[in-house]
Image (tube, rainbow, N blue to C red; front, side):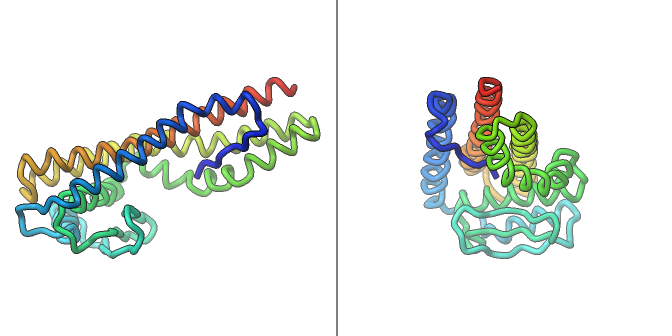
Length: 229
């Protein structure tokens, strides 16, 4: 969703270094945490697919399909098609069950018309459009010394920043729902639930890193735009 900036922006690029370092750490954290807990089998009889289905049924949701996706760690819920896609649907590992429960949490949010999720879904087209046009508009405005285009680029990028910020409560709430639903359905025991929380916390860091990167990119744009004027 959020694009990077070339080094020709000079010293302004230094603004991004903390976010880049945090993003690298977040990626390492989710991959290492998921890999560690992917080796731990749940003591229950549930696969990730079965766990997701149980949670959806418990929430009174019967119109969401659970499918598989081939890309590792690409699990997601598609609210438009009402499809929950899992990268390891037949695994009974703690990691796979935790991620499946998180995605089921998104389906529950959708069914209950959770406000931040509805807002995020609504702004996806605007955010995508803004993310694609922001850099071209901004650069053309800088090189042509035409402030309206610079401003247009900043406004367009702000839509992408808004998307990353709205994503934070959506993801944290889905994880909260996942933990509560797993406990209530007794799909995992308390020690396994602790491991699930570790996986979901590591995943949440990637969204925090994305929001931080987007916010600092916006700060850099504002700084560059102000100086060129």
